[in-house]
Image (cartoon, rainbow, N blue to C red; front, side, top):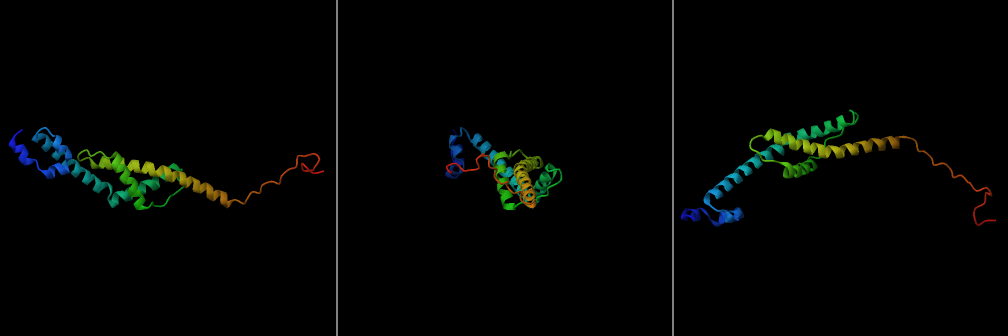
Length: 160
């Protein structure tokens, strides 16, 4: 190893990237830090686009349309709580985001579809349950029929 390698390596680099200690050459370290900077920059841009207010509004509209279409245009659901929506968005961002260069539109579309499918299924079940509940409570109560005595003696057991 050259002396130049040791002058580039310092404790700050080791603390921010512990993998640096296992690097075999200065070029590997440069490639790693450059890749890390690209990923961080790409992730930041994708994060800004995906969590923007405009995209949250798009997901809100997708959810309403998803339930509306799945119920044969019978049920129109209200807008969802933005904080709850962002929690689910964060989960899918961490699990499914692929930080692949500059194709942000395709990545955001895929993430939006995942969020819409996940939340939409739950909303669909709850909306159908609510409709059945409203139908049930709007009908008059059905009384349970009186019990029928099947005993021929018409006496209860244990009585004379």
